[in-house]
Image (cartoon, rainbow, N blue to C red; front, side):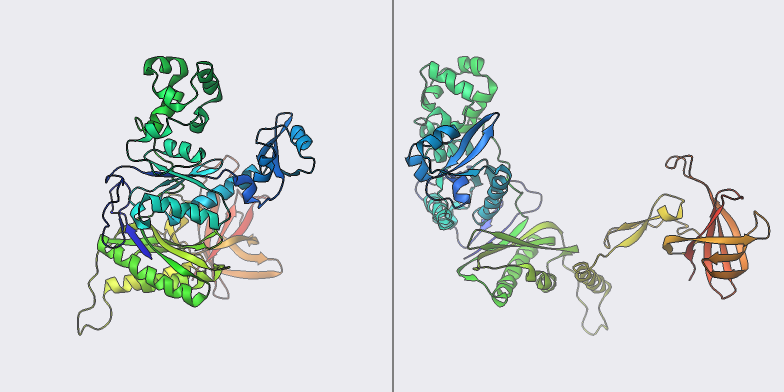
Length: 525
């Protein structure tokens, strides 16, 4: 099954998704434009990540106390629970297998799950420590409706060995609360308040102090709290609690913070039989490139950065990025850029989904081809061929060019820029009488002159010596007072011609005397 979408330029909102003719809306489906969120709660995330079985638990420290952070279902059936003292747990189950907590590894694992969820939506978000939030507005029909999407999510996580509780609602807070309470059928738009009414207060993750105060007042369900007068609640519990309640009911919805922004354009394909061989991956990439470039052409765009994502059957996601200097939508050119980098893919048991994403696009107009009978390509075709050559070279080695910089010190006159960056050449640059290229490291010399301030007549470097036939100079360069300190010395540069015909650019630093030093800084062509 292929899926393609292209976000129109300069338009916000959720990208439009096209996958054939639009189906009829299902009963209870969200009206067009209404936001829909799928929440996924992983109740055994810590233990299932490590594939722990039997009576096992993960412990952590909280100040001087050692507490359980997570338990397996078998340990939970014996009466253990997170937050329990480690000594009490060992008294109940003496054979309890203990493992230390790894919060950083679990956060990285949850992020990988978020990237894996890109197969369902371009806007996944994290709901730490053990949940995900998926913006599914406009994508549920690809799975047969919200009920079908909910079942597909649970089945996908089950295939990966993870227990997932899924809920769908119009707000992230309501969907997450329902998922943490065991999951529920999709909530119709506007029904969030009624759906969360039977839930306990802890389902919405209200502050513990607020929950304790509500319990003292005899309020133990969210519906009981929502029925209370708003003004007294706001005065007593403050804006944090009221903001959570309003966000859950949809009175003041909060925006999601997606794991990454959606790509400008995307083409994806899913496979019944996972791809393992390089030939199959190449064939699928060719189809994706043709589909993506067609979408780019229809939108009048060209891509400067493409990312190929391979979704393995074991849940791992691999990425291969390529970039171009100028916007392009030529499938042949992108295929040549991907050709060598595809060797980095590790299919393992195979990829069941490939997605090609355009992350940096720019307007690109069609170019005029060569006229019939005209010899050779035109200037636009030559510029495009040069850009493609530089793109291919950039995949193997660094490519750069020099640009002038405001400084009169020779080593600061130029700076490296990208091969496609615009470069403005000021009048009179480069300075007349200076070599185009300098030595990477100046070579220290010893020199003999007729007079202390005269040009050198003999140069020496180690055991080598050269007689100077002609010399021009000096050209004095003083320190830049706004950048250099007082310890920086001036330099006197000379253009010298040796007896062997070589022309060098040498300088002396400092005033004449014992402390004067000579340097070879460049060579003339």
